[in-house]
Image (cartoon, rainbow, N blue to C red):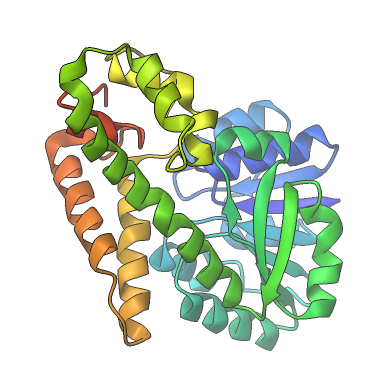
Length: 296
């Protein structure tokens, strides 16, 4: 299949690599063109503009930073919708508020194309291995059309409702995880005087009822981070998760409610970013509260 990918940050690039490994013909675009170069070296075509990526493709996947980036990629003078896209399928995978996705879907329908949203759970490794968790919103017929491709990217796909429902679900599932990283750091602060080996600390927490799956999957990286060692490339950075936390708080306000714990976690993430950890891995959050220095 001819597929366009707009947005080749960490996740977009990993998804593109997965699709190329399965034999799809990819055309990629990114606002910062140099981020497309590894994919170009692997055989992807590089589009000069978003619309060029769409024009070469049957299906277009977008995974962008925020609502402003979506607006630019889709609606700029040379954006994805700046020319004819009749009959094409757009799969929007960004983590944004539901209203952003609903407004975009309406604009795409006006252009004679279809859109589903599929924000995903998982990081770079699962994206490369086709083991993401997809939270799909859209019309049943459009979801059915997208499903064969989504099954190559996701270990599990849940159609949770119309466009906008996927965005709501993604914000919801990210919330306890992001709060956890802060809570885990505070828990570590209570036991740092014990002098236990970091790997043992992580193992103990992972084997308790309060230990989420992320502790098992990232145990080695966490232990290395707690020792101030290099634990490999950044998978999810603090600033990206600050954006998600802000989005959660904004969405809650639009629904007439508040998220007090999430709001306080956001303040802690903001403090970490001001301390220079914004572009560092999310493991920097608990490590900072453990009172250790962090490799950003």
